[in-house]
Amino acid sequence: IPMAKTIHIAVIPSPGFSHLVPIVEFSKRLVTNHPNFHVTCIIPSLGSPPDSSKSYLETIPPNINSIFLPPINKQDLPQGVYPAILIQQTVTLSLPSIHQALKSLNSKAPLVAIIADIFAQETLDFAKEFNSLFYLYFPSSAFVLSLVLHIPNLDEEVSCEYKDLKEPIKLQGCLPINGIDLPTPTKDRSNEAYKMLLQRAKNMHLVDGILFNSFLELESSATKALEQKGYGKIGFFPVGPITQIGSSNNDVVGDEHECLKWLKNQPQNSVLYVSFGSGGTLSQTQINELAFGLELSGQRFIWVVRAPSDSVSAAYLESTNEDPLKFLPIGFLERTKEKGFILASWAPQVEILKHSSVGGFLSHCGWNSVLESMQEGVPIVAWPLFAEQAMNAVLLSDGLKVAIRLKFEDDEIVEKDEIANVIKCLMEGEEGKRMRERMKSLKDYAANALKDGGSSIQTLSHLASQWENFGGT
Ligand code: UDP
Image (tube, rainbow, N blue to C red):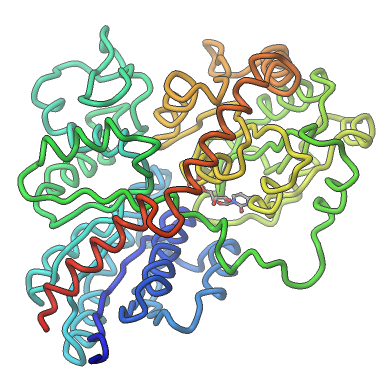
């Protein structure tokens, strides 16, 4: 039997933990399942990456080649804009070094395909230059992907701001969605972030395929609708769930984290894990309401606390040195020391969700957190903050019925009584119990998608053979 030919692929993430990890995890899965593939990750960065990204990058295994590009200087970018703009600009300014890296790789061995994060879509031109196939890695659901692909139509059909739409938007195969719940960059159509999104959405029609982080069992009708609509020649590839669960990274090295020791002494399903993703932040008023709400609920909890900010994504692209614990209400730590465990800024999330003492997740509904919770069968209290998180919350609460969504008051604050009631309902109520059962079924579906012959593994093999055939014999 002749040796399988080596197929060379380049993968381009964008800065930001949740645009780096899933695409690298995808690369790992590709080379594990198809050892004849060789992947090079070309990594742009904005200044010095946050500690979370740094420690993750150290875990990239040697069978994946990584090239770290010269970082973009923060001073060269606009201040006070959405993270999406900073991420996009970082990639744009890195294009010359991306090009150089690709060119040098391609001269050694032809690149069969380039897979780029959505913020690195501009590298499509390079794929053309090297005659490589070009795929986008969309780190979210079929639901959000359907919306993004539909934005050019919405832009033509709708004259008002989307948030003022009276009727929900109905996308084929998807839940109806209110304008107010669309991704943050659509909130203001005159904003640069919206224009960038619109441009990306228009150019999406030019790619060979879109890989997205979902699985057929979860979103079959949305996925079928995407395929039927066709959008020309684009292939749609649900390859998820792709998270750090099941990845070699979380074989605990060194000492067990204190919070995991604490969890061992708590009853089954009794602890609520509270976290707002890799960079979500709350205002001081909201931190107080959350603290009192947790206390009022009487439930056990692990809370990852960050220093307050008036921007909801303040910690997304950088870490601060400020001690977040000093922003908690006076006496809170003392009063809750039996029931609560507080972590500053960062938690070993995957290990926490895996623990049988954890019975609920109060989450900002970042897609990675959603998938991780699903893979561990943990129901959710939904507290969306930014990006496409409100759409994820809609999918979880209205669609899958595995989450309760918190109500915000007019001043955009969630009050302590609402927090306490919803937490109690999820952790102790009948409704919570049903949600936990439904989440356990989704856990099984997710595991099935990833086992030998499962839907996502088949999708991956299908992609791999496309690339092998393109590469010639
Ligand atoms: N995460 C973590 N510890 C934390 C906060 C986040 O390990 O304290 C990980 C989490 O497991 C997930 C990712 O960071 O994989 C966050 O991604 P998500 O899409 O949920 O939210 P985002 O960071 O994009 O807002």
